[in-house]
Structures are given as C-alpha cells and as structure tokens.
Image 1 (tube, rainbow, N blue to C red):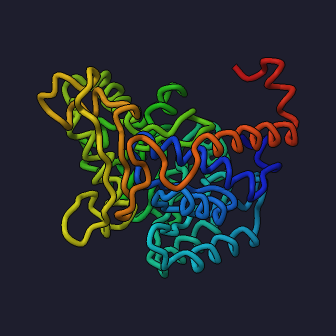
Image 2: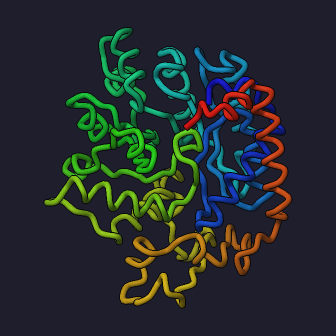
Length: 353
C-alpha cells in the first residue's frame, strides 16, 4: 500500500471508496469507521452512496506519503466542516505510534478531548512497529502511548495483536477499545487475544481492516471468523454467536459514537437497519435468527439496507448509484493508479501472490 499511496488523488480515493462502501453495504453494514488520506473525498463518497461514516483524515508526521503540519490542519478543517452533518461524523485519526511523533500524539489527544472527539488509531499491529518503538523509547507501543497519557475510553485502538506481557492490562486500565480484525489477524498469524480481554473485563470490537490486509469489507464474514478464531483457541471460555452479534452491532456503534447510538430501533435512535431473507436453503432450518445470521448468512441474504431512515438498497439493488457503472469506474481508476505508481508491471509479472 505505501508504495501506491503517493500516487493517490482525491478523485481516485472517491471512486475507490465507493467500491469499498458498496461491498460493506451489500453485507449489511450501515456505518463505517474509516481513517484515510483525502478524508473529504471519503466523506463525499459516503454521502453519495448513503452509508453512515465515522471518518477521519490520517495524520502522520513521518514515513508517510503526506506528513507534517499541513495534514494536521487538513484533519482539523475536515472536522470543522463536517461536524454538524447527519450521517458523517468526524473523528481524529493519528496513524500509529511509529508514524506520529510523541509531541503530536499528545497535542492531538488534547484536541480530541477539547472537541469531544473519538480517536481512531492503529496500535501495536506489527512486529515492525513493536521493534521500532522499543528501540526508540524502550517501551512497547501500548506502554508508549500510555506513558503519553493519551489512552482513554474514547480511543478506538485497531489491532493490538502484537503485544508485551502487560499491554492488555494497560488497555483494560484505561478503558480503550481494542478492535479485533479476524481475517487480517488470522492471515498474518498473530491474533488479538480476545480470551484475555474477556478475563480482564475489557470490551473489544470487531472490524474488517482495510483492503491492504483484507480483500473485502464483509462484516458477516468477520463475525463468523471471530467466532471460529476465538473458540478454536479458548475451549474453556467460548463465546456464542449472540455474543459476536452484540459486539459487531450494538457494542461497535455505541463505542465509536461515544454512547450516542445504541444499535437499536428504540425511540430517538437512528433508523439504521437491514432486512435479511431467511426463506432460503442457506438460512434453514431457522431455530434461532441471530445464531443463523452469524453462522449462516452471506451478503446474498441481505435484501434491503436503510441508513438514517432512507433506503440505500432495495431488493438487493442500490437506490442512489448505478452499481455496474461504479465498478467499471473503480476498475479503470485502480488500473490507472497502479500504472502511475509503477505497480502494473509487478502485478503482471506475478510479484504479488
């Protein structure tokens, strides 16, 4: 990804974001939590297709394609521009510990508290990050951000799968919200220790990660993968399909919205909901609806999606966009981007397997 990203433009991000959002909506996802470059274009894509977005502009001070004070200004301007919209909810998005210096992490944390913003960052995701932070600060990434005083209940900490002995205890002490990305973690060979998080009494979330680590945005798949990965390692502390369903729906939206949204259709809540076809061979026999959604359902069973009371998908068809046209635009955009970045020849030569 990092080799391609310097060639991105806002228009590229808009068109490719629509492709990912289509994938998410078709599997029944009504809200996304995204941090990336060109956040304005991501937000415009979300508005265009109709998905709810908790979106932040990625901030890096080193090693990234765009770094420095201009990116901080962009992120803050993005927040000011979008903070009063109905379906776009700005968040703060420092990238991770090895790409944002300590001074900036502290300043951004103070800004988030001042503006009452959710912070979404990658944390303790790779051995490379672990080795870099240890060599520089003699601490693990989680110990590092804890020492800076930036961990709290409004921090969404994606991954947290490469950790030292007491790191998860630190997360539990601060109330931060680690997010398990089961497909990415499983493919990478190092998963978040959800068993220990349960022992510590710390809530955790479920996410899909990005297309660089996971080739789709299907939360039905991620729920099923969570159930399998957790229970395959934890015979004496299994979780149920209902546990996974509650995490992926109510818990996720509650934490990222800071308690403003509950993931229910109670009075005063957003009318974000989906319809699933249960009258087919995949969903039968139907003894328990929630269990079958987690263990059986695919995007083929999602027939209708509503966001903020508006029908985004009806009878498996998008209401606001032409699906085939967007796919064609995205394919052309990706091919153009890969050529521009010098990756087309590498792909054709089979260097990515």
